[in-house]
Every structure is written in structure tokens, then in C-alpha cells.
Length: 114
Image (cartoon, rainbow, N blue to C red):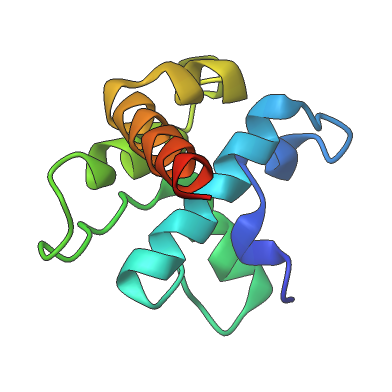
């Protein structure tokens, strides 16, 4: 049952439908879990859990995170796989790009400092 909370809705319909979009869904579940300290949908019974993943609206994330992070998580958890970003598209989102630039700047400062 440990893997069930990470299954995308399309995998509930067709277990062979694994695509990069299903991986992006799982990344969204992991991000949500890191932010909320619980998975987006929970139930002790497997069938009900899968029904919740398929049908239940996503609970809002805690508000203590940046305004940029929650929308990324919500985008990764769109039920329609075509609406989820690819890994390349995710890396091009402005909040992600700004963090990449910041990290690269820090690295170049470290290299320059020796």
C-alpha cells in the first residue's frame, strides 16, 4: 500500500499507462508531502484511497510556504496528464529558473574564492 498514494489517476484506469507525466504526478505528491507532512489523499483502505485520488479535490497546502511553491505543486497534481508540465517545462518555470541562477552564482563565487 506504500506506493498507492503516488499513483496518478491515469494509472488507476490503465496500469500500463506509465509516461513521464505519471512521474511528474509522483513528484507532485512528494512535494505536497514535504510541504504538508502528509500525502494529498489518505485512507486506510486501498480502494477508497484510489477513489479519493481519482475524485476528491486536492486539499490546500499550508500557507507558510512561498507563493511560488504551491502553484508548482498544484500544477504537478493536475488530473489531466496533458496539463502537467514535463521535466523540461518545470525547469523553465520562473521560480525554478531564479533558484538555478542563484545556485550557479553561489557555485561560481565558491570557485572564485578557491
